[in-house]
Length: 552
Image 1 (cartoon, rainbow, N blue to C red):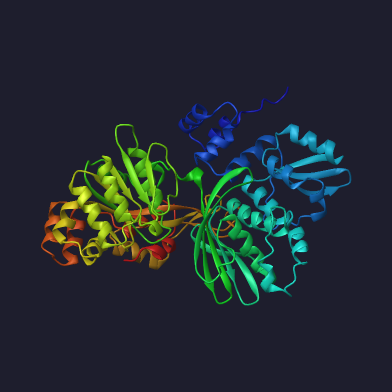
Image 2 (cartoon, one colour):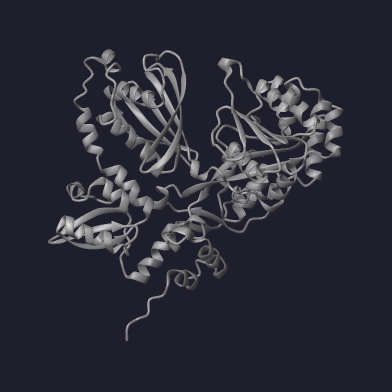
């Protein structure tokens, strides 16, 4: 009697990885041409590694980890890079008339048949994660050709080099595309091109931490910089002053938007490319990592008809994402939302967005003044940098508008002093500011290699000082899907300060900060550190990560 194959959903429910309720949600939201596995992964119900283990069991096909796999580079000629990327396959080894390949979807019989016909080998499959395959393709394919071609560019004429404009098909253009494509695969937020005395370092910021990806020979530097400048429409003859530009391009069939900044250093121009991932920008407020109490408080703040709501934190702490998620929730045809930003990072339908342009005199303050004549309900100011902007924002909030903005301070209470230091009268701060959200990003423990452990004595001590207890902590052991770091992905920790009547009186009377802090404790404000420690208790992150971004 033939064995009946179970469907993937049932298998995941049976193995305890997925609840019946989540399965039904995924089935409901799945479009006709989508695979159930992809929907479940998108929603974050399970990790790719867990899905693969279930498939391995269901299909009896072995699973292979490509991290440090000893690839045979001669086999890459059998499967072109485009085919490998499109079908998510990579050749592993050959034995006699068999070719072993790793695939993200070993049930894709069309691809297997195509491979058999094009290579003339019998195809044996293994399963690997999509990220693993893409990372390996970017790392091993074409890496050598780019360098072989570039070796011809010797450094006998460094001055004239920048004059040779690299074209679309040149080796240096391929190298640039590869650097960007690699960064996208590894989900990097920034690419740093750092010139050193004898080499050029390519570094990626992944989950908030910088990591050196590769070192390139020094003679490539001016070609590389020139290519980047052409793509971002900068002046390639100017290398003595900083420049800013943008790249809009398609890489691996995906539209991407990159902000480029150059800075002259002793060893040449340093470039930083900020990758704006348009697909993940419009977050749902529920996906930002707010705990239930903070989420309710933040929603109440942005649903008020007037007042200023400020989001604070250092550069790269996800302030803009939180702002956009808030705007997205408020975005409806009954309200007129206008933003003034520098630069407009994500374009949202239904919202009027203004780009600041200081060289023609359109500053934040000037843009804000014009907005007030446009009958707005909700105004978003990209950043409060000076007294003039904050005064116009306060005036807007006092005349019946809701104003959302960001400011650079360390915590929510420090924001009040910062506004007063900027020269704003305390009574104006007290009457206009309705709430302040302070946030930081921390790395999440990798779900594929997480293990529960006993907390260390210092951890127990830290929790005790905040009036909390801890029995167990979760740490990642390091695996191929997290690059042996033990962390994968990031989440936000928050401090939501709702300014109540008592705090308003304290601000108006110019009382010391300690009184304001006491009032915040009284109103049950969850401070950054506490929110972080709650998330450590839930096994989402580690104490080390929280202490890296929040201080007692």
